[in-house]
Length: 294
Ligand SMILES: [Zn+2]
Image (cartoon, rainbow, N blue to C red):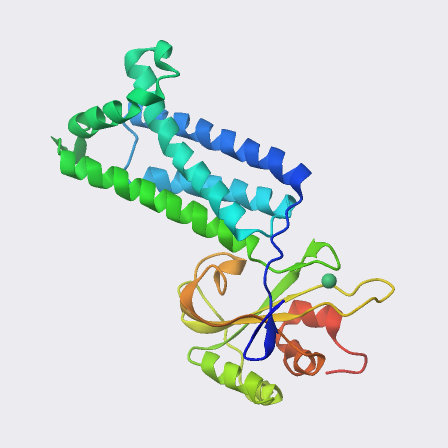
């Protein structure tokens, strides 16, 4: 735990469950290489759409990265980011290398040294079909390759780091549960001030907001442990607040995965604050409502 403004905030421990993480990391790395071969297959068949195809393949890698980081209990953002970056890079190396082997024969399988020369050749010869007009432009090919790789690396690194930064309870030895609540847009600053001045209970009067796809709202995320059988020490309960400018599809793309401005990030709540705010979070409140509480 680190502190901000005198209040503890969550910091990942940096630990990893090596025996599980390493084999899974190798598997996702190998899968990224295989996806590069598949991407070349699409190119060969004339189905390679710039930006779109790398984006879709990156999302497949991202799905695998989630598994590796979650089950390998990777709370190390640097390692997660490096793995994401390595997978993204390998996707492109494998894509072009498959093209090189396809053109020059399998005996080139180890010739990574001639890859830059082959990529240069592709930049000069790849054609772009637009409204049935076929053109070749080194500049456009170069831009498409750079943008495709850039988007891939951004997605894989950003996402992997994000997954590793989710709260993990070291005393329970598990990722925390999470629940969300929504207020109308512009309320985030008010929540931060209410928290700092001990007036969270007044938020009870603020009506909830029903988020929709692409809605703008204030998103609250709570990360917590389910109650432990037989009690045990209280686990940290963390609050994040974000002014969401564009909400996405899927449960967790309304706060965490949504675009917007972070107001508070994983700050630890006191039991009194949990009691004042908890009822806003339906799932959380099911297991944390005090006996006789509203
Ligand atoms: Zn815990």
